[in-house]
Length: 432
Image: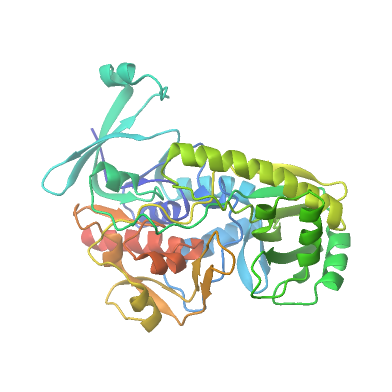
């Protein structure tokens, strides 16, 4: 039976940082990903850019290495003083390369079939070693040769939905009404960015909303609009007209944010549509309804752009995210439950895994109900990443041990990078 120091389940943002750091520290490391590439939200979900989260970050070696390698191949820019503008397609290649060079073993198309637990300790993980049909459970259960047991001293759950914690019957924190809307991002190509940027700068003079920079000979820009009425939006008359003319449904305009992409000189990324129907991200029927609804909305939003935005006349939809953008689902109960009071007071901890000042960012499906609260610098303790129920299980990413409002600030990618790196470094001290 193969034995590992660290097994990371889930190859998203936090999982990649954890596996890379563990491998670089000399720990025998395996990362398991159910899909065909690494990156999670930042690749499959098209969640770019990685948001700026402060000047005094810790556990940033992985993020800095990632930025440098992406820059070397033309997949990174620094825009509005944020280095986190990354190309989601090139990331798939760079993440493979980084983890392989860190001596991390990678398994794609792999899931956990079973977990053996003894005295609050994961002793064994059972993986599929063949590509399995998800429909024929009888064949799976009768054919032992389809599976491979492995041992792990430490397991890191970076699945986003805390799937390992669920299999282990861990305690969770989420409540029924603690939800955020999901989104489905997409990319539009063949946009005349020079024409669009000139028109946009004239149309919207608010530089807190609309910005344009020329970087390495390419136009980079960002703008936004929401249906909230508690602030002024330059794009509002265009959205009003589109709804009146039947190009958009009213719900299509609840959230609209677009920006350019490093290494894609004619493309625009859309941080929308945001689905206003209540969606339980762990419910397959809810997710199906949301995906179908979102893809219809994408078609309408693109028609809006072609009709009302200069430079989009000959554009086309070139990519739709492979998965919904989920902001919150399960949250495990850890050895310490981090609270919004801890965050707002800047409570200090002996073993912080991250330092950030990203705002409390909680989306709502109702007008004028979203939260974006600026806060001072805060830190997160390692104890919020350790399961209360399983001694050798760590949890990183959006499913950590934090209350609903605190999680709304902690869930962003730079924080997840720091969580992954911080956990790996902590585990390394335990192996000494």
